[in-house]
Image (cartoon, rainbow, N blue to C red; front, side, top):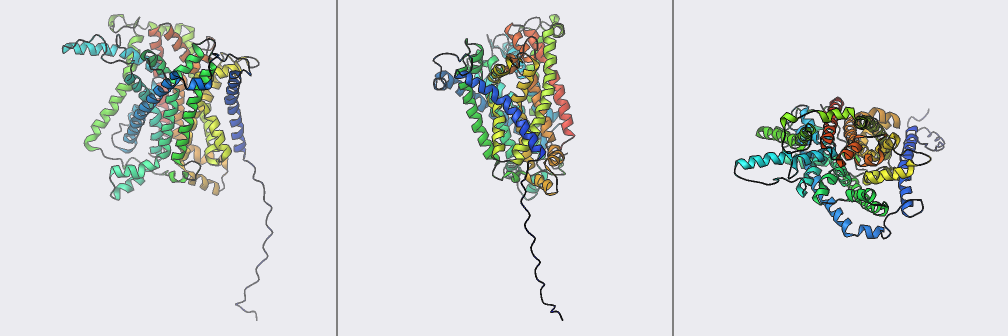
Length: 588
């Protein structure tokens, strides 16, 4: 009889299967191909510009006594760098505070006013930066500004006689205000998207356990928002460092030189073109942005396995647990509407009044108002063509940029690795390069034979895609960080490949951030001035090129009319985009 306690002999272990080499998935191949194509459009123009700088290629390098060291250590450059830093730090701090405050009021309190609450922090984005700068000049010019004229009249009623002012847009406080207003939408969109993806039940649980609103904010909300805050800070620094339109209109008259304007002067107001100074000063901006990017990555823990700490997506988020502000509810709403009036309605009204006048004057002759400036937009081919080309290029290129950002972000943030980080760094390089410098590099690379793209829509499209890709990538990266790796790994464990995970998991959760990014990029492209001034031509005009040309000729009513039309179009596009975004929200 067989012993029942006798254990059967163990079965022979199967021979180990031969290890198979894991080949990249088709999505990875597509990512590499796309990254290679974009790297070419980034590296080739810059390399050619550098070769020209050192005399390897045929080009003018500028003043004979200009060297990298002499340029970056000159008093003129250091003063411009200091001015730029002051404006970006002060304006950026204002933007982060206002953007975070509006995001919290809209997403976590009962102060929101329906759909209008989402629009209020973005109103300054509706007015293109060049049009906004001109609008503020029309309002607050110390001598003939419309708003200053009204204030002087009001002061006269109380016995105060002012010859000029009382406000002066050509000042530090005027320029800091314009920087801050311009940067608020960038900060708000990043922080708001983070709050929308954060499960409010975590904050409710903290309050139920006895923690007050302040403790909940610092212990629960703020740590979970690290990716969004890091993205907001990075975007504010990048956009602030590269801002040209406002300081060239306001800062030049105020005597406040900044690096972007100095770089533009190196390539547009010197003969021969001083490429040494332009590239040297651009390198300073690049170093600053790279340092900011490193700090951002340390903040969110990218590359150290900390991304899982931010997987706070909730499936049933709602506004039912919104913080009750009580007596502060009405003041909070007044604050939001007051910001709307100060940031967008005032400069828009300045543009509107000047567009209806025959010439710019502080006194509004109501009987002499006309629509002649708007008639010119349709009668003059360069104006109508410029507006149409801007809209078509902005819509098409913004869509392409967002699609590229989805694919590249999956490769750099999800797949990871040293090669992915290198690709991420290369593709974000244009964020640190002033658009005017990159535009000249594109002309040097593609303007002549064998391409012959100079003054065509092709070179404009290439510039827009390459230069605005970093903004789309930052929003896309922040969305991936907020999702976290657990959901991605769960999809892979269930058998889904890279393409299916991207299509079924990542893209649906990233959609709100992507739509916001698309709207932002559309407005930036439609109102672009720096690249357009160099790459556009009378054969292929765009709005920025036309506005700068009209400003140089003193055609103020025509500039104002074009600014009004651009603002109305941008407003409609952003409102529609926000409406579509709301349908994809995770938290309802």
